Every structure is written in C-alpha cells, then in structure tokens.
Image (cartoon, rainbow, N blue to C red; front, side, top):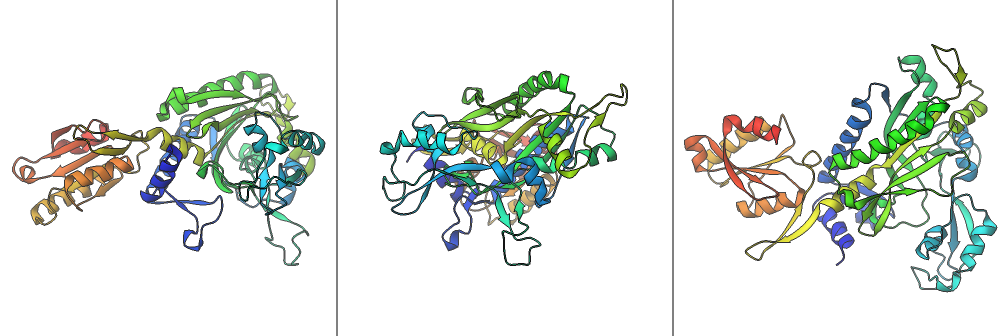
Amino acid sequence: MDTMEKIVSFAKRRGFVFPSSEIYGGFSAVYDFGPYGAELARNIRDAWWKAMVDEHENIVGLDSAIFMHPRVWEASGHVGGFSDPLAECKQCHSRIRVDHILEEQGIVADEKMGDVEINTLFDSIRGKVTCPKCGGKDFSEVKKFNLLVQSNLGNFTGDWNKEPTYLRGETCQGIYVNYKNVLDSTRVKVPFGIAQIGKAFRNEITARQFIFRKREFEQMEMQYFVHPNDASKVYEEWREKRWQFYLDLGLSEKKLKWHQHENLVFYAKAAWDIEYEYPFGFKEMEGIHNRSDYDLTQHSKFSGVDLSYRDPHTNEKYIPWIVETSVGLERIFLAVLSDAYSEETLENGETRTVLRLPKKLAPVKVAVFPLLKNKPELVAKAREIFDTLKTHMRCEFDDNGNVGKRYRRQDEIGTPYCITIDFDTLEDNTVTVRDRDTMEQKRVKVEELGNAMYNK
C-alpha cells in the first residue's frame, strides 16, 4: 500500500475524513470531516484567521452569502470563461480533463487556449491516452465545460436556463461586491484587506487525489486593496508572509517550493503558487496573485456603481489594485496530514502509527486516563482533573482497554500529551504525563498541571 492509500485509509478509520453519503455508495469528489477532522479543520481555520486578521490592524473579516446576484458571475467572467477542457470516451462515455492528461505527458495547457489550440495538443498524444474507466482509446473532440454549479433558487418556471443562479465558484467575489460597504461602515483606508473563509463549488470533470480536488470545498482568501503604484512591492511582501505562515504552521520547508505562472490571464500582473509535496507530487496549495484593478473595474461597469477610492489626504481618485492570497482549507489539511503521518518500529519490534501534528493543530490536546476503570477512586480523580482541563483546552477522557492501547489510540490521532491517574496520585497528588513524540513520562503535581499543559 502506497503512502496516499495509507493516509486515505487512516483518515477514515480514525475519524478524520469520511466519503460523503457512504451508505448510499458515496458521492464523487465530496467528503465529510469526521469528529477529529472537524477539530483539525477548525484549528487550521483559527491559525489562518489569526495570521491574516488578528495580527493585522488593517485587515477585516467578512462572511458573504453563498448565493449572489447572477450578474456578479457575468462581471467576473465566470459565466463566459470559467471552464476546463473535457473529452469523452466514446466507448463508456466517461469524461477526462484534458489539461491534466496533457500535464502528465509534460505538456502545459492553460485556460487562455482556444478550442483549436487545445485540440491540436490533445491530438498529438491521443495514441498514448487510455480511458481510466474502460481502457478505451477513442475520444471525442475537446470541448470547454463550464464549472459553475447552477441552481434553481428563486426560479419557479421549471426552466433552469431562465434567469439562472449559481452556487459561488469562488469566495473572493463576495469580497469585491462588499468592498464599498466595508469602506463605508468601518474606519479602514487603502491599503487594507478583507479576509474570508467559506464554501465554494465547482463542477469538476474528474475527481481524483482524495480531498485535494473536491466539488464542494472551503476557501480561505484575503484580498488586499492598494494604490496601483504600491502593488508590486506589497505583492512581494505578501509572498514572504504567506511562505512564513506555513513554516510557522509546522510544515517541513523541504516539502515546500515556489512555482511561477508563465502564462498569466490577461488581467494578472504576477502569479506565484506555494506548492507542497503531497504523496502524489508537488501541487499547488496556495496562490498569491497581483490582480490589477480588473475586479473592481468589472463590477463598477456591470453594476453601475462607482467603486473608485478617493484618498482622504491627497484627494486622488483611483480604482485600487488587488493583491490576493487564496488557499483551499482541504489542501492545507491534506498537507498537514501527510507531513505528520508516520510509522515507526519500536525497540520491542512493535509498529507505532503516530500523527506528529503541530501541537496547536492537534484535534485533542490532552487525554486523561484512570489507570483502572473499575476503581471508583481513580475514575473520580481522573474525572476531576479532566473537568478542570477541558475548560482550557480540547481534552478526551479514555478508560477503555489497558494504558498501552490507549497511548496508541492517542498517538494515532496526534494527541500531544496523555495524563494517567494511578494509585500514587491518591497518595502524593501527582500524575504521569506522557509525551507523544518522545514517549517519555514524568510525574507532575496536580496543582501545576493546568499551567504545565497550557505552556506545553
């Protein structure tokens, strides 16, 4: 079993990620976070929000609606140009995403290419392409497939082609259309940022690589509004900050690298990705983009509302440029899981699976054990300690099986510390604290336990 298969199996077995609607056979490219996955995801969100909002006095948060006026998506270009190249197997009618097939053959295809260009590239490798479902080699011509997920919200005609609405394809458009509201309702002035965490939806042609590419996913984005003359400098500053975020998060620097986009979309002035080395290779985790004034200009044009900014000091009027940082929560989640997952052989020959998560991301910070669950005095003391600690950090009470098995369970979900209450605790008011990574154990006084765990 390769590393990716192990992580997928582990994620389900230990309650991190479940296939959606599994009792009905699952639903392609949709997944649910289990109990420990929900906690890990929440900790990642909190770390991102702290780095992007709490630590910057000129960045504010937003939570815009998933549904927006359909004209938003016309202005943004999604209705006309948000598409991926698709080809269909003529034998079984399954579909492939052609740019991914080309990439596997070492050929770069970008979204700016027209139908003729992409078909020419695909024709050059047709003999090497087989259908992943049936093994066939006969494919249709390449066509562009729009990724927006259409809805019938507010449409009672029965015809979805009339006045279509959409589930949002990205969260940043909610920021752009609220840019003026934020300016008018807060004390921010350019330069300033608006950050948001929220769901986005894309009708992906092919689903692959576990939670890396989903049809329903969560974006964490920040749009930074700047004077046009400052955009390049600010862009480099945000590249540096975002790289440092992943080091502070605890990811291995040797598994991170920069990738520069060579073929930019027409409105972009610069685009770099931070890539992580997942079990299936280096892939984009976060994009940092200099989007120029395209977005606000488009929404001004389509809405008829002036979205220019007047400098209160110089009286200069201009459309701000936007520096964007955009990352998928699930991509950080998978990177953190991949980075932390390890199997090791102990001195006694046993194999230990341990999730070496950074402590601030661990779903459970402390596990509390009574040495024996059939000794009321030990259980009562363990409950007392657990009830005290749980108000300060995420804790778990475990009295099932012997202590060794409990350690292994907690190692697998990444719990940094386990506390065992034994008969000595009743005598000297000390407990055993065991470290996940070193497996070392030390006695700590109960009255010092809260501060000790918080500091760790």
